[in-house]
Length: 138
Image (cartoon, rainbow, N blue to C red; front, side, top):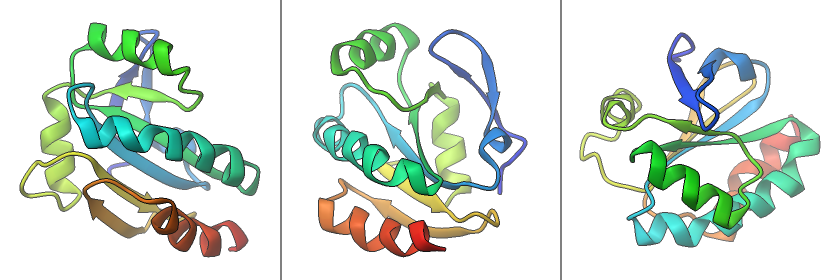
């Protein structure tokens, strides 16, 4: 699903979403101006720490301008990859089922590349554990 999509990371390096193939992926669409997005970042950081060793990767996809995202990511010490989608992120979200374009928006892709979960709105710890726990064991 959208494996050929290429976005730029915070260092300006192009990254293909296919680079994480074979892992469970949590693509979290967010923006620095989105309060619920900011609130869920500590949960995503903790989820990466908890589930990363099981082959689960969190990838933040920022629908925002590069300067704001770089500054914000550094201040939060976000350890997972952050990709810059800027305005293209809205189109990418729509292709993944978010017709409203609302944020935050999270999709989970299993090891076989199937979209297995989507959530519009802020994630809670219970959401993450219910979704990622079984996938960590798969």
